[in-house]
Image (tube, rainbow, N blue to C red):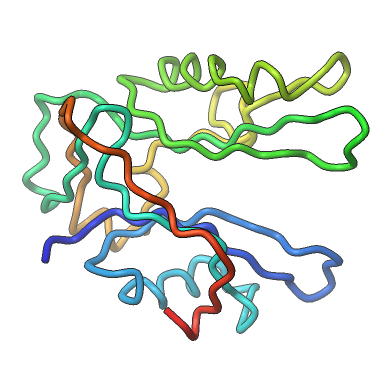
Length: 185
């Protein structure tokens, strides 16, 4: 079995907090269970309270096939990169910041940002004084934008890299949704 890229929505209620909090973990392994210790190390403040709310194997994104290859076998002919974008927005009358997490294949950060800003979420989740945005961005007006290669654990980056190739028949991966304690992984 070949290693795969996993995207995992982790949740917990850290000590002293009133509401559950979430973060997105990316790891490479043969199975979700293989990444359990990496997830715990990713969010040490969560202690034993860490759980999974959603996860997916990432093998296809927007007409591109993703393959995990040894770090020294990266094919530089394909310049496309995989970006994680966390859009944030608001709806009148709701006491919350809504989020929409997405993976985008683009040549660069500007291209990924353009794609994100063309989504229905970005266009329709906000209003004057509370505009939609990209959370956690690195150089963009978005809540968060990361090139996946930058957010993988260092130990993984030394072993693997993500190869992205155009593939028109690529079918987007399914998502597994629902509360799952790490003890059940």
